[in-house]
Structures are given as structure tokens and as C-alpha cells.
Length: 104
Image (tube, rainbow, N blue to C red):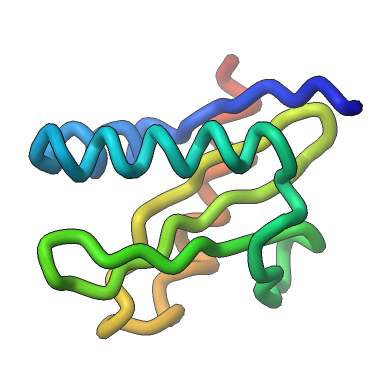
């Protein structure tokens, strides 16, 4: 079994911190499942990364997608994407990965 390290972009942390307690707990439960098996959820296409996945969530009656990328040995939590905006902003959020990880 792989040992993955879960890292969150600052943007993701900010998004989660703005949610209510119940929603945060729900997301943390999903993160535990990701850590157990990061390949369990649906893979989505990206120009920048080959292993981008999404989890469908319904938070406060809104369709939200939790987007994460696997860059061995890390699982990077990228953002919570509003389903209505679709995936138009996804590449912009994925671009933050390289910037933030190079700072660490």
C-alpha cells in the first residue's frame, strides 16, 4: 500500500475554512477516503497533469466538485469547484500547484 501525503493548496484551505462545520467534516471524511485509495474517484482531463480526479459533493444544496491531483507521493487538494461554473477555471487552479509546491 502506498503512503501518500495529503497537501492542500492555500486556496483550497481558504475555501474549506469558509464552510460550516458540518460541510468541513464531510470534506475531511472524503479526504480520508482519498488517502486510502486516491484512484477510487473519477479521473478528469487536464492539459497540465495526467492524474487529476474529482469527487462529486453536494454542500448546502449546491453541486460542488472537490478537485485533487496525484503527484507521487503527494495528493494535492486543489479546489472546490462550483459545478455551475463548470470546469472553465480548472486549469487556472491547477497552475497554482507548481507555484505553491516550489515555494515549500
